[in-house]
Amino acid sequence: MPNPSCLLVPEVGQMRVVSRNLAWSPVRLAMSNQVQVHGANLGAPELGLRPQYHGVVPTQALIDHLKENALRTDGPFTLRSGATSSWYLDGRQVTFDGEGAWVVGRAFYEALGPDVEAVGGMTMGADPIAMAIAMVAAADGKPLRAFSIRKEAKGHGTGGRVVGPVGTGTRVALVEDTTTTGSATLEAAEASVDAGLVIEQVIVMVDRSDGVAEERLDYLGVPYQALVVPADLGVDG
Image 1 (tube, one colour):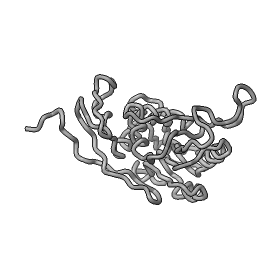
Image 2 (cartoon, one colour; image 1 turned 60 degrees about the vertical axis):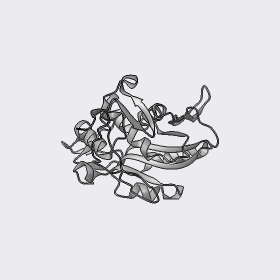
Image 3 (cartoon, one colour; image 1 turned 180 degrees about the horizontal axis):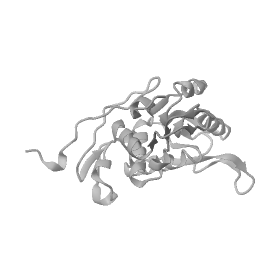
Image 4 (tube, one colour; image 1 turned 180 degrees about the vertical axis):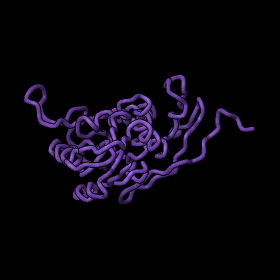
């Protein structure tokens, strides 16, 4: 009988890549107190987390968490774009939850390119995601910063729209919880460029734009990736 301390749950999901040149490797959950995360042993007692969230989180774990805690199908709902929909995903029911944040942070972390130094996006949808990714990275021994983009510049303090430990030349990944048209990410991209940040990639948790967001962001010339699309949640786009 195998030793329970090294028992691995079979691979149950794959990262969905919406567009170009994004390689990925199969992901798996480790059900143990001592598990391998990018080659480092992380003990459950030190992190104080449920064992199943120590290892690499497959996309299916994120999908399941979203369906259980964030998906509503009792519409109609009015979306940010002004359109109406029979379903709505309240991503903050997951990203502002401790357990959910770990699942989200790990899933995003696995999608990051090797050159990314910081993660962030438009407040406030991107804020908890960016912090979750940075904390997962810290647990993995990788230095990673988080930043936020204000909706408008402030006239006091340091001013500007970009908040956090980033500056000219910092290589960043823009993140978002849910996109319908790509407008928030476009705004984040413009503010990032104005601040001198170098955009390496764009990652959204749920893309319900049916390809519109990817097309609008194509001018950035960077990889665009959605972790989840409506079909994964069992709903129509």
